Length: 523
Image (cartoon, rainbow, N blue to C red; front, side):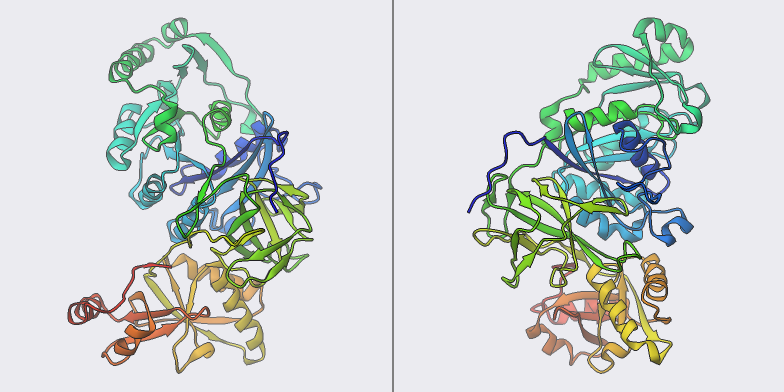
């Protein structure tokens, strides 16, 4: 049974925001909501009922540390378009969560600090977006602060990421001399103004470009020369190369002072692609008007302490989702009830009746779902699995209160399902001393905090002797178990991992046993 898309459906956009920590990603997220009318003042993101205040950084540890450690979905309307904004973690230790989010969007905004440029710590995020062919808009933030100059930033984008930067607007002056930006599409100059404390939308003051550049005096002369150079180089907005992942439209502004936000939000609607066909694991293509299908890209427990449930975040790839319909879990073939399907806005939630390709829905307490799983109606379909990455840090978890063992075991299992950490078990120690494996050490801090505060399980973490892990199979595991200084651990889903004390042992094992399966990119 097919579910044709209604002709009257509003167009969709699904995009993510990626950046280095402190580049202004969370501030930009709130300002986009402000200009879309989804919130009245910055800093007051509310759920639909307005019962409690919440921001995209809603976890207690996020608010204490002032960093984003978990992806968030924010759905809102703007210019007759339904927009699904996926805010991503702003810390490199949680880059795996960002990789998963990038699989659920059709485009992304890359935020760059005007003073710092592209920082090595998060260069991989930008590279992954390019490798996946995700069209990237670039927002150069904090132009009201001193920096090296816009031409240098363009050079960095081209040299480090390999994208051709095509500035849509161009800054006149920087830092304390920031005068405004020239819109290269209509040759107007938008004067830099500050709204009161950056809480409300700033009114744009438009000037004729030539008169504006004259008013900017010396900075105007410099801007004229730079604009002439850009024209000579042919670095002009090109929608075709943008959608092909070859070029990136660049916008300059200041998220803190609400400058340049309107232009960026309009670009999401005007330039970013609508949801399109998706490749399946067997090489076929799932069209947007085929039967309903989607995949799980995130699982989160205890988003709301009043509910104490867990939520599977599903990106709709095709067809029409309707609350209450029966869908099927591809790995098991089991039917799933969707009576309690949710629409998400940060920590807030509300019942959703219908969703179309590009939308994100929350399925409550569907315990069989795992990250990367496909759900569908009609003929069976399976989307490619989401990759995970070999961990680089290892700790052994011990339950400090024997009366809380059930809570300890439940919490460890839940964190594994969410991808907060990877949980591996030694054949002799099992659940008594599970090994927590992570890409970055901050993941352990989050795991410890959540085990103690959400699950009531006091935990002690001790360093492990392991330094490297590689995914393997049963045939290779039989040989690996006989090699000195190599252990084979197992995850809850049955996948096997060879763990090594040192890089020397790992390389020596590979050299002596080239036939063994030792994968760094895990599936």
